[in-house]
Every structure is written in structure tokens, then in C-alpha cells.
Image (cartoon, rainbow, N blue to C red; front, side):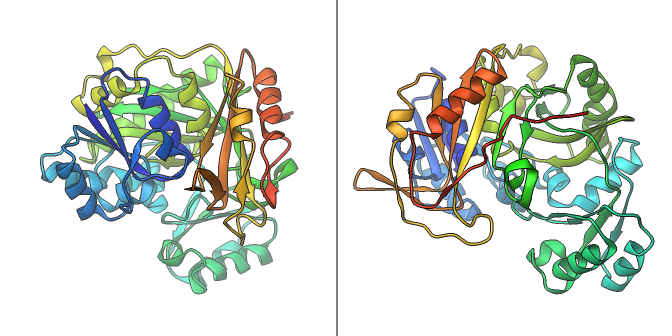
Length: 422
């Protein structure tokens, strides 16, 4: 089989790496890919959002299955475009990908079908929004309605901070058109857990759990980022919690989408808050998480290609998906100044040395390959993942690998996986 993966980050590198284990794949392409992916797949310089060009690429290369890693093309309707041309593709159609494309839509869906989530109101008028926040007790959560690279959520500790945040989103358009509609949400407390799930439109199969670290600095300080590291499994997502989540959130979400004629095939990412009243949905995503994928897929024992095909064919209930019993930790090494401003073009050294440990895999996110050397080419540069028999071992191994890697102005958190809860 010939397979095409669409995207250019660490998530796509992890997908490529997992797919290469399938004996069914003869040739693997990635568009546009990155420096690290180019060592494992043939990269084609086509933008992930240039849907007509990607359709042409799939036809030209006679691709048997296209896997869409990124949210933007999914929300734009890439699956509909591929299917219209008779091309086989893994991912949700546009009318199902809206669960990530519009937070206002997903909140309305949860309210309509009694899926547990935070209380909220949605606003398109700045004055109404400003008046509403004055009635609330901080902390106050502001969410840009549309896609914002994982950074469109503000947790405001005062009314004044919320007012400033609303003006940034709705007037100054900090997140572009994504912030013209804003969801103002109740602040929930408890540990956050990411549960990614395979879905074929009827059956939903959760993957192993993970926890992400969004803040830029140690102790969860600094600005929100796309993710500074992650670990799997969660220390707090027990079998009992998983059972409750399946019955109150996972199955009802799939049923709700079907009731709305928005049948979902692909990956549903459930961002959960484990509150004292049980698990509640913070957000849905319509694709693999980044960097959660970098700790989840290394633990997968079943052929990933077989799972993708079962999701497309509606036969997921016939497949038994296996995971290893260990753990994994991913530490993101970023450019200094991320997520605000940073420089590119610095040489990266030590990755080959780090990967001499068979438990370690370096996933490339923002890298470029020139004359046999790797250079920084983005905010999140690489994700250093290590596996272990338990979390403590995986964390220790990941940081030992990080210590071997160097580039100018490198920045990483020192506390990935070290989460304390009351």
C-alpha cells in the first residue's frame, strides 16, 4: 500500500513512525513533513491546507490511504474533498470536525445531549460579553470559538484581566477570526486528562490516557503553549473513572453526533477535567493531540494501519487493540522565547547520541534538514520521548536524553510528569 500523511509536526512524525511498523505499507509519503520525517518518509512540499493540490498529489502518487494529522485541513473539509474524488481518507468530514472548529457548537451539543461540561455563555458582541463577566466570580475562562493553535484559551484571575482578554480577542483580534465569537466558561478544578479515541461512526475505542503540560514554564507558570510535554498513562485516570467517562461522555458524544447527522470517523480527542462531580469535557479535538500522540503511539502494539482502515470501513468493533503495560514521557525542547517570538536556524546536536538508547525516540516538530545537519525551524523544535516500565523510569530516561541534545537558546520544562494532586 501507498500511504500519505498530511502535516508537519511532532504528531505527524509519531504517526509516520508508527505506520512504518505495518508490513502492509510499501511506500510512505508526508506533505509537507519536516526534517526528521524526511528520514523515514518521502516528503512532498505541498501545504497541509492546499486541499486541491493534496487531492492532485494523492491521485498522482496513486495513494491508497491518506491520513490527515492536522486540525486546519479537517475543519476546512479535506475529507469531503478527497471522498468526492473517490479517494480513501482517514479523518472526520467537515460537518463532524466542527466539534473542534467551533467551541460554541461543541458546547451547544453537550448542553443539548446532557454531556457533562462546564457552564458557559457564548458572545459575539463585546459589550454584552463585558457586561456578563462583571457578574462572575474569578477565575474566568475565555475561549476563542475557532482554531488558535492550542493557545486560544485564557484563564483570567480578575474581572479586569477578563475584560482585557475579551478586548484582545474580540476587538484586537489576537486570534484572528477565531476570536470574533467567544465562549465564557465556568472555571473547573481538578486534574486534566487527555483521552484520545478511535471512532468508526458507531464504535468508540479509547486509547491509553495521557496528561499534557500547556504552560511554558515549570510549575505550570507562563503563557499557554501548544504543549511543552506529556506523559502516559495518567496517574489519576483510574479504571472506575474510565468507565464513568465511557458511559457519560464517550458513547453519548458519538450518539449525539449521529443524531445530528454528523457521523464521526477518525480520532475524537476528549479533553477531560476530573472534578469532584465526576469527569467533565473541557474540549473536543477532531484529530490526534500534539504532543500526546508522541507518548500514546509508542505504546501501541496493534498495527496502526489496520486500525485506520477499520475506522474508515466501520469495522472497529471487530478489532482488538492492544497496548503495552509500561509508560512513556515526552519532553518538548523549544526555541527560547516560544510561544511569543523566537529565532530559527540554529544547529541541533546530540540527537543521534540520545537515540542510541533503544527506549528513546526523538520526534521532530520544527526542524529543517540541510546538508546532513538538522536546524531549528519552529517554536516547538523536537519532542524527546522515552518509554519505561513505569512513569518514573520513563521520565528519568527522557531527561537523560534531553541532556545530550543541544542548540542555541533551547528551552524545556524540568517537571514533565511530576504532577501533584490533593
